[in-house]
Length: 236
Ligand SMILES: NC(=O)c1ccc[n+]([C@@H]2O[C@H](COP(=O)([O-])OP(=O)(O)OC[C@H]3O[C@@H](n4cnc5c(N)ncnc54)[C@H](OP(=O)(O)O)[C@@H]3O)[C@@H](O)[C@H]2O)c1
Image 1: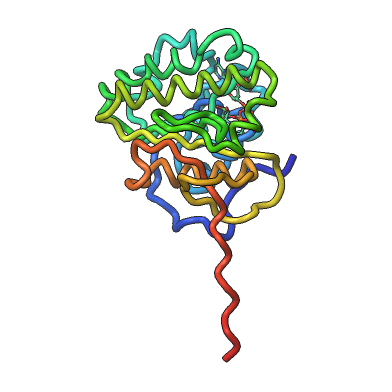
Image 2: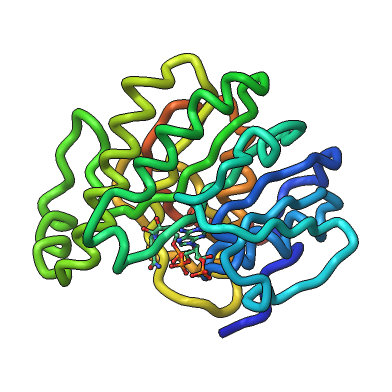
């Protein structure tokens, strides 16, 4: 596994420091989001089940221990946050029940109570967006998934449906990420309604932070693709 992503080529200019609530901070995408947000000077509030699983310690990293279904101080977590990044995943739990949907159902009114900070929810490219069909190639891949992963996609689909139905007033964005491993950055991801790239978790994290505050991404459920490299300059 590569070191968590910090700054690198293609990153946008530093943003003003903000307070971000990160859910899933110990996960494969989450640890990159935390590292990148801290490198950009943000305050990070992380809800984690086991703080030992955090890979960084930092004066601007504020750790709250807890499990999503049991959090009874959601208002305290969200209060003062300028953005919420939700990178939760638990394949075993999601095979049994839609835990993320239950959480997002609780989160929506809390966001509203606290001025509607932007929410980035990371689903998978194989999760069907509301009102659309997956392209045949993605449907074929999805049909091969073990039952556990199907549960995760069904949960993510229910999250998207809930956001569309119950949060038409809030600035949420769902990234249907296609993530395939760690390693050096392969480029800059951009939002796409078409075919997803299989990106590194670090590049997915960088995209998540950018999409969180991208007005054009609000209330979309798109995938992402690597931006094509510019053509080589013609010889002078
Ligand atoms: N992995 C992929 O290839 C892939 C590809 C595309 C999209 N996605 C989607 O992206 C999202 C995140 O994926 P990921 O692979 O980055 O995540 P991950 O490595 O599976 O980590 C999930 C994170 O969620 C946390 N979590 C799970 N249940 C929790 C609970 N009840 N309370 C608090 N925290 C909890 C985990 O904490 P612990 O450390 O305590 O387990 C961990 O930090 C998922 O929705 C997934 O469907 C994943």
